[in-house]
Image (cartoon, rainbow, N blue to C red; front, top):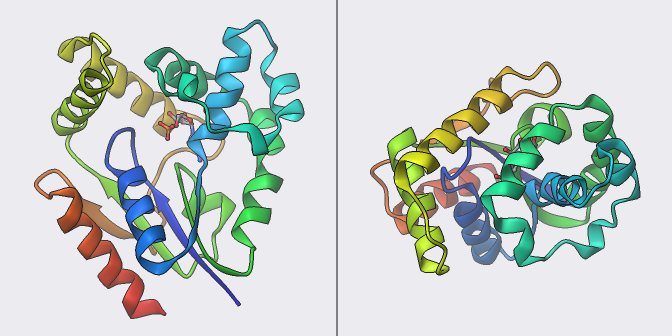
Length: 201
Ligand code: C5P
């Protein structure tokens, strides 16, 4: 039996934290699909061409702190507009989603394109200011010097690119449950998400 939870939303809305909390609570496997695009972005920053890097990607080799920088995030959102790059990453995501048992995937197009039949779809969002502040605190905690205004601008630019692209734009699936984490702690957001999953199991 397979049970898929699809989580989408803009940058720094709390998708990853929520996805990990759900995976831990229910014992589900978790795939952060942003890492796939980040790995392609990093490959391009290292001199590769987007489509070739995407086709040669080894998804087994993704946990890498170097993928967590703003420069890589920005490069990721630029390669993510290329239809051939997205196409090269679909099979790995769908195979992961079809595994036996429970799975959680988070990204931008999981409920709309990758797993349109997911048992649960969540669209996780928060105000741009809250998201920029969270990203700022995350960077500072990792010892990286950051500038709030620059981060807000980067977050807004990335959202615009993700929402306006022609292929698999960021949009809530019609049947997604919206969770706005602007005024929620990570724990409160997780409780809401767990409650939604419980109703579908
Ligand atoms: O989620 P994360 O911020 O790591 O994603 C980095 C970028 O990868 C996003 O801004 C987006 O452009 C792209 N992405 C995507 N589709 C996904 C996951 C990420 O286009 N499913």
